[in-house]
Amino acid sequence: MEITIKNNLNESIWYRKGEFIFLSNLQKFENENNEWKDVKRYSMCYCVSCARQPPYLVEMKPKEVLKDKWDMRIFENHIPLCPPSVPLASPGKYRVYFSYFLSPETEQNEIKVYSNEFVIKEKKD
Image (cartoon, rainbow, N blue to C red; front, side, top):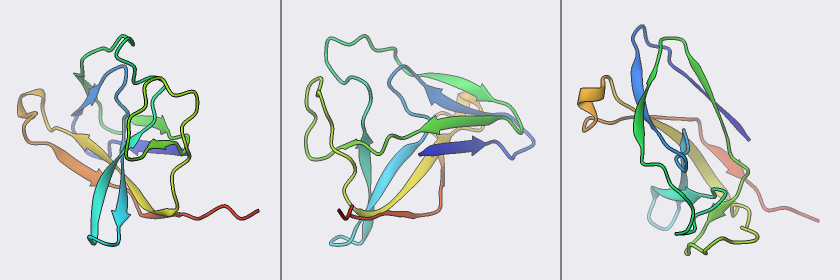
């Protein structure tokens, strides 16, 4: 799944970037609690031994477009160390969101924008 993020404002915005930070975040709708819950997307490696770059702010200029991809894999209920395979997301209602800031000095005032909801259905053989 490809995710496109475009700054439609007439001013620059800033977002967090880092080696293991996705441009967009994922949420799943939990019917039993009637609320959206963050879901941990799969990254190439979550091992303690993997080198990690701390997050830093990057400027996104007006009309600039970013691309993000999601391979439909998530960690559910556990974080395995260097998993050889990670399961696909379970059926349900999902959405993605992008967090940004109006200036590097306002990092505590995070703004979130959400995608339309989408449904992952159970695969039928």
